[in-house]
Picture 1: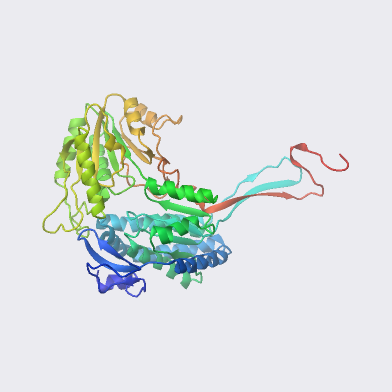
Picture 2 (picture 1 turned 45 degrees about the vertical axis):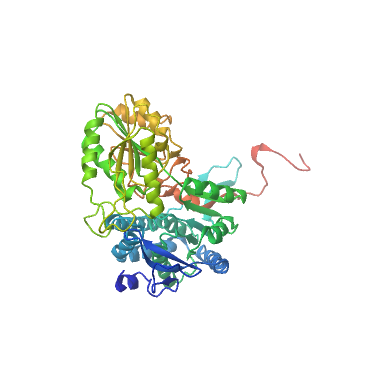
Length: 514
C-alpha cells in the first residue's frame, strides 16, 4: 500500500496498525497479521483487543447510546449523510483496500463501498420516516398508537467477503434508529474495518457525537464469545457460516436477546426452455464466478431444462476458459484469489468428492500456480451432475467458484431440486412465459422457498432498497432496505385516556360498585 493510501484511510497513524517490520515470522503476542491473498504475503499487523479494552469499548458504546438516543432522528440522519459523503470521497482508495485485503476485484471492492454509500442515502430519508401506527380504541375517550424507540448498543459480527457493506447495512440503519454500534470484523479484513469505522467515528465526533461507532478486533474466544454473551447488547447481528449462526443464535437466545442472522446460501438458477439464453448466460456467469464464488448469494447450482442444457453449458464452458484470473487490482482481472490456503484445500476436496460421486468436470477444477500466482488462486469450475441426480457434494456450500449443473424435464421437478437445500437465501428463474414465472413466485408459497427471488436476473447483486436475507439455515434475518429498520428499535404500544373515568377493555367492570 502506498503511504498516500494509508494516510487517506487513517491507517498510517492508527496505533492498532503495525506496518514495520512485517515479515513471515510469527507475530508477537496480541498481534494478528492480515495477508494479501493474491500474494500470500502479510500486509500489516493489527493489535488485538483484550478483555480490558473490550470493556472500555463497551462502556464507551453505552455512554454513546445514552447521548445519541436523545438526538432527534432527523438530526441523526444528517450525521449519517455526512458519513456517506466522506465515504464518497474515500470510494476508490477504500475499494482498493478491500481488493488488496480480501482479494475481491477492484470493481467489486469499489461497488461494495458504493453499497454503503447507498444505504447511507436510504437511511437519511428513513430518519424522517420511523413511523408508528395509530389504532382505534374500543374504549371511549381513549387513543392508541405505537412508537418505535432506540434499542441500545448493537453488536455486529461481519465476515471477510463483505468487510465494508455488511457493516454499512447495520451501522447506517442502526445509527438513524438511535443505536450505537460495537463491531467485531473478520480477522481476515481488519484493515478495512479500521479504515471504515475510523471514517464514521471521525465524522460523528466532529459533529459532536462520540461513542456511536465502536470497533473491537479480536479472536472468537476472547472477544467473540464475550460479545455474544453480553447482556448489554440487546441485538447481535451476525453474518457468517451456518455453523457460526447456530452457535450465536443459541447463546443469545439463552439470555433472551435478539439475533439478526445472515448465514450461508446454496443458490440455484432455473432455466426454462423458452428462456432468453443470453440473459441466462450472463446471469449465471457473474453469479457463479463473481468474487471467486465467495458470496453468500453465489450461484452454486444451475438447474437447466434438458432441451437447452447443452447450448447454455457449452457457452459457459467457453467463457470460463477465457476468464482472466490474477491480481485483483489489475482492471483486466475478473477473478481474484480465494481468501486463504484453507479455502483452496476445501475447493480441491470438493472437486475430488464431485468426481467420486460421478460428476464430470467440464472446465477448471485445479489450483492456479506459476509466475504471478503466489497466492490462493483456483480455476472457476463447472461440474456436470450424473443423470441420477444423487449428488451430496452439491448440498454443501463450498465457498469457491464451483457450479454444479443439473437437468430437468418439468418445472415442478426443477423447483423441488432448487428447494432441496438446507439454506434458503437466493433463487432465480430465467423464463419467457408468465405461467412459469408465476409458478416460481407462487403467493401460496409453493414456488421458491428463498428470501430472494429473481426473474430473468442472477442470484447475486441485491439492491439496498429491498430487505436482504433468507430462510431455513440462512437464519431468517433481514438487513438493508424495506422495513428492516424495525429490528434495530423496540416497539411501544401507547394508550392515552383523555377522559375522566377509568374504563377497562373487553367491557370488564371491576370494583366496589360492580
